[in-house]
Amino acid sequence: MFGAALATGPLKWARERGLLDVALHQIRDYATDRHRQVDDTPYGGGQGMVMKPDPLVAAIEHAAVVDRPRRILLAPQGASFTQARAEALAREPSLLLVCGRYEGVDARVRAFVDDELSIGDYVLSGGEPAALCLIDAVARLLPEVVGSFDSVESDSFHSGLLDATYYTRPAEYRGWTVPEVLLSGNHAEIARHRRREQLRRTLERRPDLLESAALSSDDRRILRELESGAAPATPGRGRARGRRA
Ligand code: 9D3
Image 1 (cartoon, protein in one colour):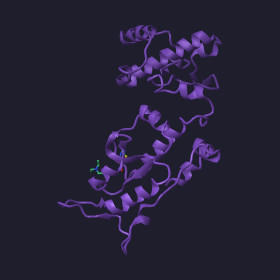
Image 2: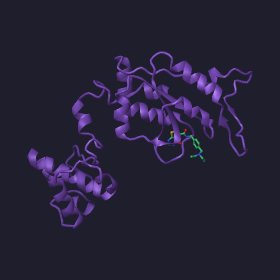
Image 3: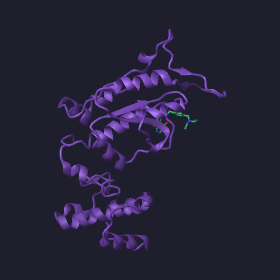
């Protein structure tokens, strides 16, 4: 599951340059019984299986000996993994990501980790895809990994707003046009247009983000204007507006 993801794009690039090192440990390798069993039936009954503490903690302790990593259990009941968490984890010299399977892990394993994190409110079949999301989000914040510091700075979630809309050639595609202002070459106008688009989309799609976004007094004025439904001077935004007759 990890092979292709770690061998593609920025993760591959970072590993080739020694900026990122990922070691994989197979929990079953730490099982000591004849059947190499890592799971068992839950005390108290119920369906499904629970990961036994012993092979899992043995794996954690084996993996943790060298560089004293921050130990993170990926779990549906964990705290939300956010961009702020990614930024904090990117400052850690080393991370140990523990991936569970089955219905969950024996509750006593929690005493052997520092944090429990979830990537969102949906059900995965294990912690591995969540660990890959975490690795991707954290690795791209490492110094020198993403080409320019600028592109990280301007990312959505840095400002706390959604991205503006983007367009590339052709200027007209199947009757759909590009907002005039983007073709104008007027960079101040373009910056204003993009900020307005960010605010408009965030208000429309993720109003919850506005509560913690870094907003200027100009932004607040634009938001009041958008909320009052005042027709903005924003060509090309919808089908009716942007499409040629
Ligand atoms: C909350 C669902 N549980 C009760 C029905 C069972 C359960 C489902 C899926 C227990 C573990 C799992 C496996 N998921 C993860 O290990 C997991 C996860 C996820 O499912 N969603 C979001 N983030 C994460 S991080 C690890």
